[in-house]
Image (cartoon, rainbow, N blue to C red):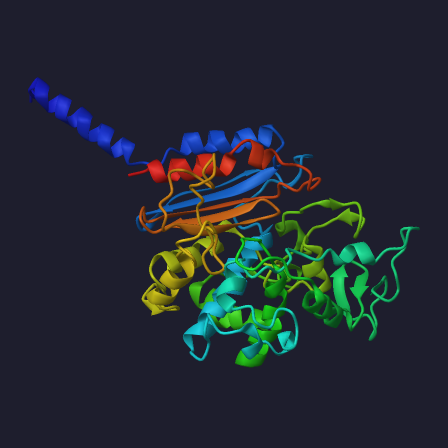
Length: 408
């Protein structure tokens, strides 16, 4: 049978449209592999979701630059500050929905530890949007060593005992009262100017204790029961060495100051480590596939596979700009794009409704409800040292976001 010439023209156009609708996997590979070649990170996981389906999921490179252990899809990364949204903020959103919490109410109303302190009148809205004037961080590890390099006994010990019960690392244990000292230091920190944007993780260290008192469940159990387990996010949680082999966990930094070893399976963030590996600030480990289930639930307005986890109104409230008339780009717990910077963060292609978070170890998650897409990009850019900044200098994350948005 002989077809007219215009038939083949139409067929070619139709095939071209179909090809245009496919994710450019080769381009994604090129972007990620360029980072590996430049030693911005030794390996990575990338997952892109668009309009109801995963359009790309792949692991790249190796755990370290010796190329001995290849990264696989089930391997876990230290999520660092992505913990703030996938654990800290998520747990707070759930409790907020249960009622009785005013975001504009002074925090002393809910957090006993903050009564009669300089932080007692900070509101939860100010704290979650990083505009309460709280200091960014406390480097507790700098107080734990003598000039000789030996650990101070009042803080940590090389042997576990009733006095030093909390595992911080292999053969390193925190004093039983060290968590109380962390709380005390947070409470005593000075305040900077309220109303100005200043990223702070301090409140997120107080959150697990408050969640436990409020719900009657340990922080990690509350998250697992409320979200991770029913979502099927079975590779997302704290203290991964209790469940998974060390070989399944991508190492982070060769810590030359505090732990004097390659950190693998233990949280990279020193303050979270001294909390026992569980905090609202850092400590969560996961793979791209498990993270994607949480993000799909958020993108779907709080539902996943016909089960409701959060109200859409709650998600909308927390993921919009907390102060839309101010330059502070932040939502409540969630990060937002900044279009006022000379180089838009994290990408000029995102909508103002998008939200996500980054992690110090080299992790990145971002959701854009307008384009019905999200991206999970996990790396250990701090290997072998946190001074490695190639991930930022190469603009890897922005390029990947723009590639995902470009998909029809």
